Amino acid sequence: MIELGRSLRSASVDLLSQEFSYSTGHLTAVLSGCLFAPSLLTFWFVNGLLDFSTAVAIGAVATPAGLQVRLLAYVLLVPTFLLARAAIHLLHPVHRSQVLDGSCPNTRLLSLDWVSMGILATGLPLALQNFGPWFGMNAVFAFGVFVLPRALPDRRAGGIRLAALVAGALVFLYANYGGAVAALPHPSTVLGPVATFSLGDAATERLFRLANSVAFGPPVVGLFGIAMNHLLTRPELGEIPVVRHTLPRRDPDAVVVASAAFGTAFYLLVVAVVTGDLVVLP
Image 1 (cartoon, one colour):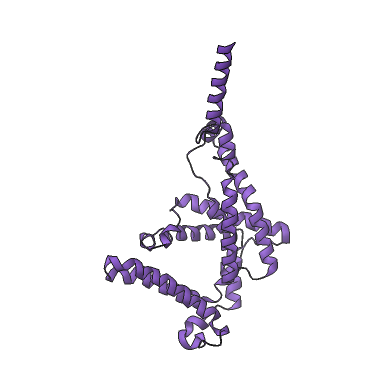
Image 2 (cartoon, helix red, strand yellow):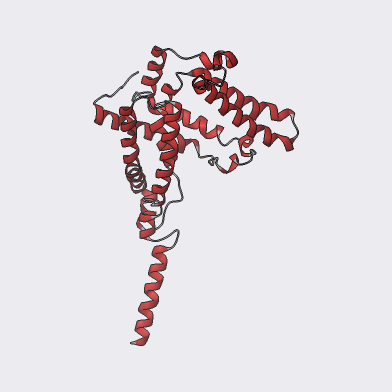
């Protein structure tokens, strides 16, 4: 009986060790691996605060009603993303056998970060209506990060790039909001067209309908995601002090475009259900 008890205890320990090990075990596959991951909830909350505060600040959300619809889509995003990822793994014959054996496929098919971008990128045409500040900011970024450091010693390049990021952000803020500060000269007198140029309402509406149409929205946002994926992972940005710790890793283009397109299609479906408005063609 003592020997039997020791054997049962050893078998139980081995079973629990397998179930709760990092890469194997059915509970691991369900709770923290390829199907559902509680850590995604933390990512969703923190990333949501950053995304929506940025969207409101730059004007990518024009009305309270639009903000409410995007918030609803973002709340529903995590369960939808997890169910989609679980379905993909269970429908794939090789992945399904791995999951049923209690291990997780070592393949990243969807990225929550890029899926969430699909929800907010559809509002970027609203922010781009004030095109001048955007152009000025990105011109400073491009010159200070990619052009000027090539003519300087390597030891000074990182500081110049960091200064360019700060200067570009200040240009954007001053061009947009400097007119409200009485102590400062009006932005149009200092920055000229950078502060005054804007897209017309008709052009903004066409861009907005393009990004929010079923036929063109998902592929357009997917291509935008690929561009951001390559831009944010450039080695020039990785050499900037402090900033290097906030940059994402480069994901495969297939993962980026699939995730961003999925997020955009999901958001357009939420809009159609809530408002009854579905734009098929721009």
